[in-house]
Amino acid sequence: MKDKDSTRYQYQLISTYERDIEQPEVYNTHNQAFEAMVEDLARQTDDFSAWKLKKHFKSNTLEELDGYDDFFGLDEDWAWYNGNYNYDWKIVRLTVQNNRIIKCE
Image 1 (cartoon, rainbow, N blue to C red):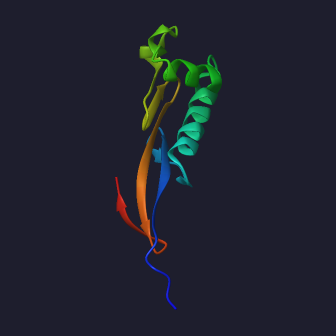
Image 2: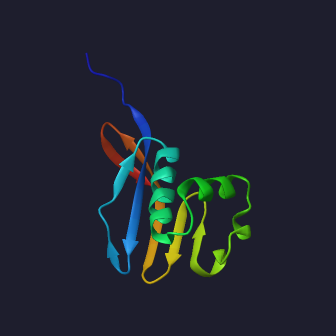
């Protein structure tokens, strides 16, 4: 007996450092990908912990962080940091069917 087609979503976190694309990572949930993105952003900023970034993001008060709009940005599916080097992150939703990616959004 053959199993029915199984369709699921996974979330790929793509990050770049200057113009180099880092090894993409795939997560089972959007929340896991978002957590990884915020952790990476926090490591770059040195001034803000991941906890502080998530707290301000969830309460929509990121603009209260000193120098926020000059150095970094954070949204549900992307982030960027322009300090000594430029970093960018993007979360892409993958539609997976029978263990094959059939759509990237």
